[in-house]
Length: 332
Ligand code: G3H
Ligand code: 13P
Ligand code: ZN
Image 1 (cartoon, rainbow, N blue to C red):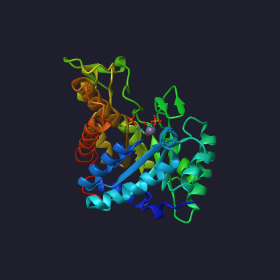
Image 2: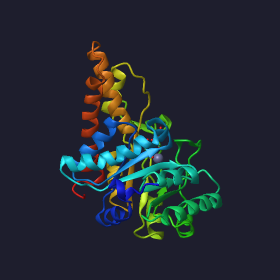
Image 3: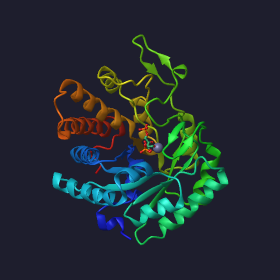
C-alpha cells in the first residue's frame, strides 16, 4: 500500500474548488510513455498550470502499474527540477470495476474515475457509491469522478455504441446518493478523432467539417441543480486539422476527422466545467511528427530522432491548451 502523498501527488479537491471559482479548467492529459509525460510536465511547469495525469486501464496494461507509480513520482521531481512544484494529480481514467479502482488507490493514485455510465442508473449508483466509500475512507482522501450519460465512441474497455445526453433531473440524486467529488456529463463530446459523422456536420468551402455545437443548455441545467459542483468533460480533443493534414501528407489515412472547436471548450471552462480530458490531440501531434521524420529522413533509426520532435510538438500543444483553451496557465 502506497499513499499518493508519499509520491508528492495531490487529490482534486482544492484544484477543483479554485477552478470553479476562477472560471478555468484543469487539464487532464492521458499518458502511456515517458515522452508524453515529459511533455506534459514541461508544458505545465512552463505555463505554471496544475495538471491531472490520466492513466486508462489500457495505459496501465501497456506501461505496467509499478512503472506508472514511479513515473508519477518522477513527474513530481521533474517539475521541481524544472523550477516549480506544480500540483500534480494521478488519476485513473474510465475505471470499470471496484477492483481496478481499489488497486489503483493502493498503488498511489490520488484520484479515480468509476465509469458506470453504461450501466442501468441504480447499478451505476451502487458501484459508484462503493468506490467512493473505499476511496474516501483512506488515510489520505482519494477523490472520485463518476459519470452520468453516455458518450459516443469507445470509452476504453467500456463500449458505448450509442450516446445519450445526461439527464439534468438525475444529477442531484446521483451526487447525493454516491458521494462523488466530481461528475462527468455527456453534452455532445465523444472520444477519438472522429467525433461526428460528416452528415452531422456542415462543410466549409475548403472542405473542413464544422460540428454541431455542444449542448450548453444541458450544462446550464446541471449547474442550476448543482451550484458550484465540479463538472468534467471527456472527449474534448479539438482534432487540429494541421496535424491531420501532416499525417495524411506523410502516408496516413485519417478520413473525416472532426473535434470540438476550441472556442466551445473555452466557454465550457468558464462554467462549472473544471476538468477537461484530452488524449486524441496528443496522439495526433506525436503521430504527425513521427511520420514526417520517417518520410523526410528515411535513414534515421535512432528513436530519439523521431520521439524527440514528437515530444517537442506535444509540449507546444499542451502549452497552447493551458494558455488559450483551458485558462489554467498561471493557476499553479
Ligand atoms: O477515453 C479514453 C482515453 O482516450 C484512453 O484511451 O483506452 O486507448 O488508453 P485508451
Ligand atoms: P479525446 O479522445 O477527445 O482526447 O478524449 C479523451 C478522454 O476523454 C479521456 O478520458
Ligand atoms: Zn474519457
